[in-house]
Length: 330
Length: 57
Image (tube, rainbow over the protein chains, first blue to last red):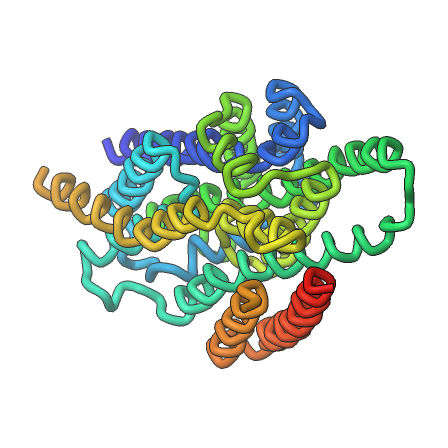
């Protein structure tokens, strides 16, 4: 019976990854679609492919952080992980329905923390691990913004005397294909690993594998497949908010934003820090927009995004507490 | 008032405030970010003044 429950929760985790792809991965294609470098359909295929092959480039450090550094392992059980995932999925679906680009990553961390608190109180949380994640919740979008602003300025300065605008645009459009691929690679690396981390934690908690073992290959492959499939199904409402409502982008701006976000994601993924890919690309887009003029950024939309961020962790945690209450009653 | 410079100074303050909470081996990141935001704030002020002077002329 327990093994059936284990595989059911693995399926729920992969569904979360799929919803994550559906909800978050649309961000990887927002700028290429907004600048008309690729059609929405081609952009989705492009992003999904690079989401999938990210496991060939990056390790599994982020997965280890999620499995071992958020909640004490002795509190983890099938019920806790199921409740955490359910809280995160419900929150993601609510924000998707409202068209808000909130963070699946924060929803997952909020859900896991909420379920653990419901089972064993606040002592079940690992302070140092959560502190590092909390610091980068703020630093990642600020780093994306900084790099986006700097790259945009540097590029404009490098080409400001060049008069053949059409030719320049063509070069930047091609460059944007590479930057979109790099961003999708970073997105796949960071986000797919979060689900890997949850499944890894579940397998450790059920004594299926040793805590010192590597993440099994089938977990790696299934997590990347789920996120790539989610990306393929797309999330057009969020594409609209990210690509054109925050600020209008030209190919040069799209390339700068994606390169800035990709650089940030490469760094944090190599370091094993789970961050919000949504926040990172939003920061980068705002950075590029503000390199033109501050009024180019639609701050009321950015403000709505900010509220979704602030509410995500407590919202997902509340959903997880409720789910754990229901699960433990049976 | 140059709103962009004000935003950058605020971002620099946030980065500097987070430096003590960052792990020792990567503490240079928020510190470098705070420095970069301050440089961009200065550049933004210069840009704001030069645009205003252009407009007045």
